[in-house]
Length: 457
Image (tube, rainbow, N blue to C red):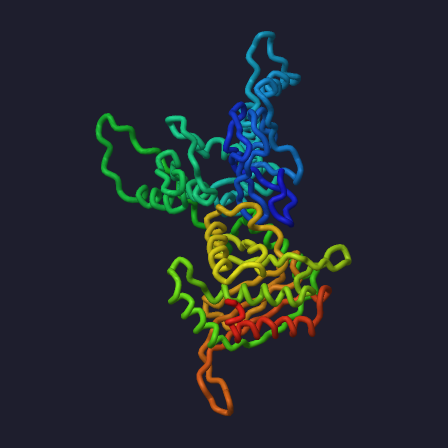
């Protein structure tokens, strides 16, 4: 099990992209893993045959634990032949396939799990499985979910060709009862996307003409999930949501936060952005957020005490300036990281941050896109938010919360004139640096944004 983020402790196997006995090439996508930050396809470390899957789909393993074995052709056959101590097969009989044995075991355990929780569901008077499956955060629930995955998840089309399905599309297909084998993917390489599944689900809900003789009836849809009864609707968290909640709670209650707010004149920054975008192709345009990223990156090089973290009673000052960008999704919060932001031009920051956010939203970002953050920003200005405070994203010691740019009446040279103002609030871990440093850091960010030509040069 690889480490896919700085804070990851365990990973959950969502899907094996190869079967036992199949050839594997080094660098080829092998398994889809859910970390505490994202669902990521992990490549094979070596070439050979996938001789054994140790951790099946739906189960979790600790960092460094063996989840599969890759060997040559000779070693690939040995795990199957050596797996008979419990219930010796007669001499000459064909040994059962390990993957089938595990699947049968999970199905049996799933049956027991469903039976054990059926009465609880009835007593609660609500839907036990609001998302159509057992709670995979418990030991029994994980096994039950794995068994259901064996039944539900079609990974191969009828002609034997493997399907490529994004994690979001797979979960949505399960919720909507869409058979992925009947969906034509429009993503790269024929990958099935969320939009493909939504289109198939919408088409499925439309009235269909009566089946004619000789035509097979359509696959029966899963029954719709019943609406919750009573006054409370219980929403089960995914592993990612649980991890985000745990880490933010730990940050809030372990790091002594304090906050510093400043108001920045953004008139020149808005004009610079407009002139820049008029001079370049639309694909190379920049946003206000890109200007803020550049200003923060340059300010961090001037104040290395801000580009630091608290670790085991010591302060670690980071040499690289890697800025995490908080991105809110409907079901989770993710923080992809723009690495070495201080060494990038404004144009490079705009291009890379845009691609990084798009990959993260589409669940196509790699493990390297979520690690190494040294400082973070959270921008809610596009939602007409005047000002807010953000919780520090571990292991950072600071996060900058960005509000909207507002048209205000301001006093300039003794006269009241219109101006564009933006309020920013810096959340600080008081163990790492103090109020004066925080104020000086904000002054530098303010200076750069109010004299934005320094961000272009």
